[in-house]
Image (cartoon, rainbow, N blue to C red; front, side, top):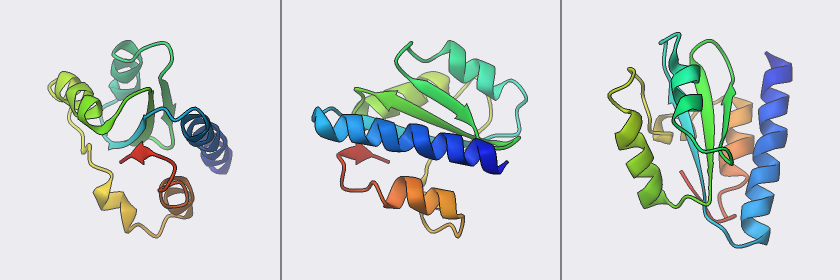
Length: 114
């Protein structure tokens, strides 16, 4: 589990850095789902430049490159009927999980939407 989290942190920091450096929008969506097909559904409904990572059996993160907040909502509308999930990261913002704080809160000012 720690290795998966470390990998996601590295990917996230790279994505936040790239978005900040090139002044591009980036949306990061934390998804909580116990659907066994969730990862595959997300992989099949994202673009080649997007990144889907699994943090645990029910927690996934999607980095939508070149995607502002309004377009991330369009993405969520597109997938919301394909499986059951919680798609707002607001419930995780107050989380005591260190990786959530590090990934989302430490990168808050880098032009990303969450």
